[in-house]
Structures are given as C-alpha cells and as structure tokens.
Image (cartoon, rainbow, N blue to C red; front, top):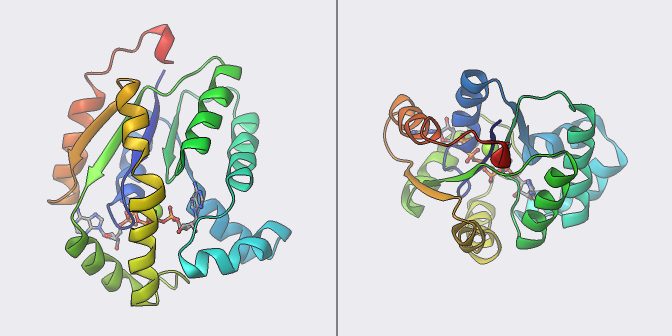
Length: 197
Ligand code: AP5
Ligand code: MG
C-alpha cells in the first residue's frame, strides 16, 4: 500500500500533481493547506486561530496540523493509501506522522520532492495570485516569506527522508503531464511490500 509525501516549496506544483496521482493510485489526498483554508472559510475556531499566521506566510503550530491529520487518518481506516501534500513541514511533524502511521500499520513509502527554482516559483504564485483569492498569494512580500520559511524550516526534511532512504528528487519544471509522468515512473518502481504499506 502506498503512502506518499509530495514535497516541495510553495508553487512547486504539489496540489496540481496530487490531483492526478490521487486518482491514478486511488489515494486519499490530504493537503493541510486546503484543510486549513476550509477551516478559515467555515469560520471555525481553528480557522480563526490560524488565519493571521497563514496570511503572513508563517507555519501554523505543529500540534494543530498533526491533530487535523490524525482526524483524517481516523476517519479513513479502509483507505488504500494516502497522499500527503504540504505535510509534514517540520521535523516534529515528520516524526509525528511516522508514529501515527505505525499506529495504523502503515509507513511512508516515499517522499517525492518537486524541484523548482525560486524565480519560477515566484512567477507561478504571482500569476495565480491574480485569480486564486488565497490570502497568502496576494502580496509579493508574503510569497517571498513563504519561500524563506520553506528553506529554513521545511527543507531540512530532505535530510530526514534521505536518512530513511525514502527521498527522491523530481524535476518540477516542464508541462504538468511531463511532471506527472516523472512522478509515476518513480512511484511505479516502489516495492509494495508489507513494510512500506
Ligand atoms: P499550502 O496550501 O500547502 O501552500 P504552499 O506549500 O505554499 O504551496 P501552494 O499550494 O501555493 O503550491 P503547490 O506546491 O501546491 O503548487 P500548485 O499545484 O498550487 O500551505 C499554505 C499555508 O498553510 C502555509 O503557508 C502555512 O501557513 C499553512 N500550512 C499548510 N500546511 C502546513 C503544515 N503542515 N504545517 C504548518 N503550516 C501549514 O501550483 C502553483 C501554481 O503553479 C498554480 O497556479 C498552478 O496552476 C501552477 N503550476 C503547477 N504546475 C505547473 C507547471 N508544471 N508549470 C507551470 N505552472 C504550473
Ligand atoms: Mg498546494
């Protein structure tokens, strides 16, 4: 069974690719960014707590996103697998995910990291900002900060998954279809043994 972490900086194409991969491999797509935006839109207590943080391009507390992920895992015990998008984003989140998955008899199969350079990320996000309505896409300084936060707090996860032998870098520049093909080429080579359910 597949449990994939789709990784990469803001604008790398995680959400775009997750849509295709979730369908192709029948995985449940869990984007913490999407879940948090739903909470904001619904005006929940969590939404109210995280709105300012997201608007500044900072990370919300680890405990908040870990609880949200745990809730999704609890609600989907029969899932064939999960596709994590934008989670984990810190080493404590990665450690918590490992513990949670063990509880469900699963583990991370691979961490697929979409590599895109900053100039292209900025261009993609500024372009999307004209139509997305996302509170963190509207301001150039916030987009810059999101990329900086990724470099400072999230990029260290590359080492975490490298050590576990689960890190794979994928060129994230090209057409959407080309990148899907690159990801699928790698996923199709993964051993689907019991240990990496
Ligand atoms: P989140 O929603 O995860 O946003 P992000 O990581 O900043 O990334 P994006 O969703 O902007 O980009 P993406 O990689 O999904 O790319 P996409 O496919 O959209 O997080 C938002 C915020 O929530 C965080 O800043 C934080 O505050 C909070 N948060 C979320 N998770 C958290 C966590 N675990 N811990 C703490 N805080 C958390 O593509 C981008 C654009 O490029 C689109 O317009 C797309 O059409 C275009 N595009 C895609 N592919 C291509 C291509 N191949 N060529 C050209 N354009 C392309
Ligand atoms: Mg996204």
